Length: 285
Image (cartoon, rainbow, N blue to C red; front, side):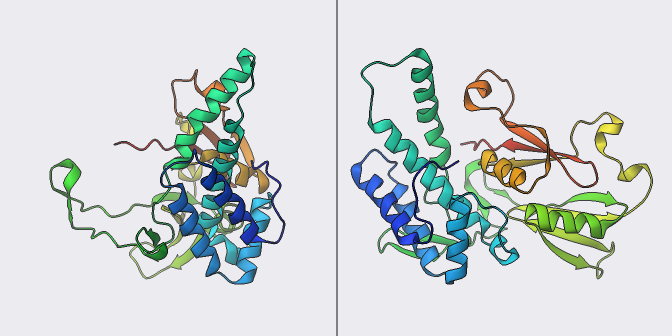
């Protein structure tokens, strides 16, 4: 959650605040590239979309349907702003600190790496050109090119979609569209008529069915119906809470998570009673 005093209707001033933090020093080397990319992308948006970004900064998650398509841009901006706030908070070191204050400061420092992971990475098909400082189309990776990191293995599997059997697929599709920002495509030209839901890198396939197959997995001894791996689960949880969905397990705070032997995660319930676990994505190098 952002704590800074941001203007309500001036995105230029928001980026001025970001660049002031960067110029003061102490940020990641790729932080400026991240700011440049976001600034260029916002500069190319209609005024209404920029205003939705300002609303998102101030905690509004109930945005118009058209704004949902560029939600990753808004989330990246909030990630950058939270990062800058943390860097600013670390500039002042008190002469004396309690044990709790020392631990809290350590948690803030440790959390910076999570924010930095996305810096400089492509966003919505664009990346920053380091030589010119312009946002350019990111080069698409050939699905069939050799993977240099693990012995020239061909990547034959391009994507996947979990199949949810629903008594009323239309009702379920409406829930995921209005409450979770998915986009629905009704497909009846394939072997199995279905509704395909997509958001970011997630795909869900809804099919009509009846009987036990439509029941939540926990009725058969399986705790979750699906995992979603998320780089910033607290942003996802805030969005879900803002849309008034049922949270079954809340995301633990950083201090509590240090004592756990599992990933940071939270669980929410969909309209059919499924329990969806959103787990912290840990990038492997």
